[in-house]
Length: 101
Image (cartoon, rainbow, N blue to C red; front, side, top):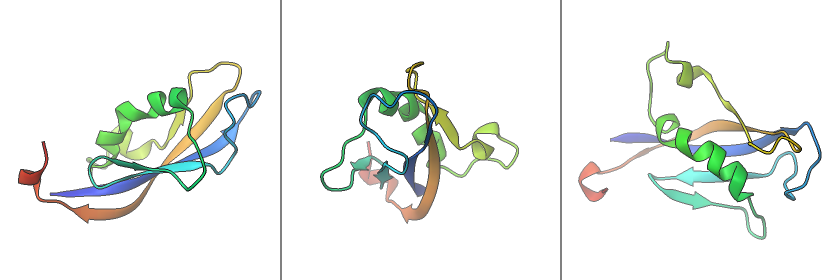
């Protein structure tokens, strides 16, 4: 089985930056489930909660016409902050499906 490794990057902050994230901050999803942050950095749990439901789908190759194959932006639910994240595919990884749950 092949999956994409992903990077979720803060693309822009259109409102008041209150969670401590800055444009360019990111986390990576590697393998099927490893979340990695740069040393000494954090990621807001509310922004993370907004993007998490999409990540499993973005890890897979979807049909070209599927809206999720084309869409890369996700917004944090905080209306004061209006933080927008971009999901990028940064590589492919081959996994043995029998070793996953």
